[in-house]
Image 1: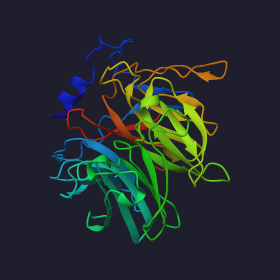
Image 2 (image 1 turned 90 degrees about the vertical axis):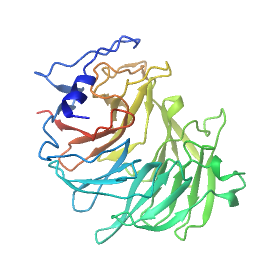
Image 3 (image 1 turned 180 degrees about the vertical axis):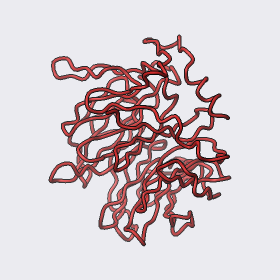
Image 4 (image 1 turned 135 degrees about the vertical axis):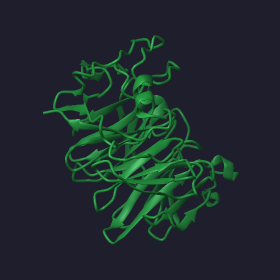
Length: 341
C-alpha cells in the first residue's frame, strides 16, 4: 500500500460512529489536548525508496542505541529496525507467525527481547537480531491450563533483577510470575466478575512513578487498567470509559496507551491514544475527544478524527515524539507525532 492510499483511507468519514469522526484539516494537523499536543510528521519514512511488507504491526521498543524495533506478525520480517529519523536499518526474523508482545530487557551490550506469540502459544527470549535463546510453553505446572491451546500470551514485563511476568490476555486471563531462573512463582488474575479478575489482560508494565513499584495491567474489555502489587494483590482500577486500551507505557510522569477501538459498540476503525498524568487522570487523547471529568469520574472517550484505525501500541522517545503502530490497518508502518510547540 502506498502512503497516498493510506492517507486517503484515513480521511474517509465514518458515519457508523455514534459520535461521527471527521477528516482532519491537513493545514492544521494538531492532535491532543493540554500540554500533550502533537503534529503529524507526514514525511517520516519518506527517506526510504522502498518499505518492507508487513501484515500487522503490534508493538515497539527503543534499543539502547536509540533505534526503534518494531514487532510484526509477518514471518517475512518479524522485526523491523528503524532509526528515529525514519531510515529502515534492517528487516529480519521468521519465527513468530503470531508475534504480538515485545519487551526489551538487559543493559547495553547485553540486551534481549521478550516476544509473545499468540499462534505458537509461547513466550520467547531472543537476542536483538531475533535469535531465540529460550522459550516458555504453556504453564501446565500452574494447574490452571489443560491444553496448550488455552494459553495465548499477549505481553510480558521483566523486573530489573530478571523476574518475568506474562499476561495471558487472549487465553485464560492469568498473570504468570516467574522467578529469575524461569520457574513459576505465582499466578493471579484470571476470569471472573470481581475487581481482581481480568477480561482481555492485553498488556502489563511496571509503574515506577511512585516510591513503591507496582504492576499496571490492561483490562481491555472493561475499558480500564488495574493496579496490582508486585506479588499479585489487587490495589485499584483506573477507569477509562469508551477506551479499549492496549498495553500501558510509562514515560516520565505519564502513562500512555493506544486505544484499539472506542467503547463496546462493535464499531471498528475507531482508535486513538490516551495520555494520563501521574495521578492517572486523562489529560490528552490524540485522535480522540477532549478529556472530561464529572464529579471526579472520567467521562466516555471516543474517536473524533480519523488519524488511526486500530492503534495497538505507542512508543515515546527522548524528545517526546510519539510513534503509533496499528493492527489491521492496511499493512502500514508506524505513524510519528511530534510535540506541538
